[in-house]
View (cartoon, helix red, strand yellow):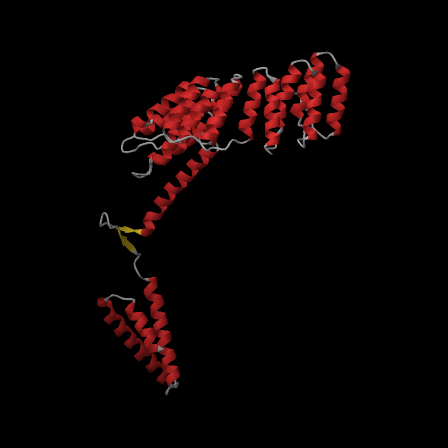
Length: 376
């Protein structure tokens, strides 16, 4: 036991100090045994002697660790010895600032993100990277500040030794798309190859969505054709195209893109079918809209309140109030619960035609079903 303790103690030292440690142990041991003889505790048993040696070794080990110099590490790249304790606060500070920057982005606080970015710039070299720029871009985009997001994307492009990635550019394209600014969304999509980036399906989808929001069906089709020749479209790509057709009542084009969608191996969802129904209503062809509703039912696809809503809205605006209310009954008979928006379409038609008695009765029906009336 005492030999094991001695071995552990001496092995923890370098070769030059091991002998000094050993001499110290011997000196202390002799002093301790002499003290035992003076006090009349001698002779000691073998077990007592061993315990005394272990106690001495334990005390020396505690003293050695307490007086040891701080650990250092050798950086392989620079071959520079750095104190680990001195390095941690600086690293922690940078990490904390970056975490705050990400939090500002999630909170859509562009001004705070700029302030935190400036703090990182004042830190050690290399603290600012492309992700930091991306966080500021995202902060402005979430706040629907397209010009701010674009300004920081340009700053990233101009930053030495840094390049934007596809995500950063897509964020800017998307924020312009949501504002219906087709020109700026298209501009940044066209810039991506010049920046050494390959646009992905999200890049194209954002531009197609911008065209759809602006009612630019021809431009949406052009970009979808390019997507077909490039990365390949997905469900969102075709859904945006169908939405563009529906907005202007281009029902035949909507049907054509639905067929191309299926031919391309992308299965339409109910949102796609609803766009076709809405397109026919916009075109003034109730019979065609009804045909598509029947098609869904024969295919075992459950229509939604939006499916019926397009028809109810068309009939109500045509002044056929009783027929519009009848469509609400048909919808609920099919297992689709009417929402307040559906009832509001019919209520509006009754009020416009001066049929206030029917409007009051319908309002009582709304309350009886537990729906919350609104002012829209």
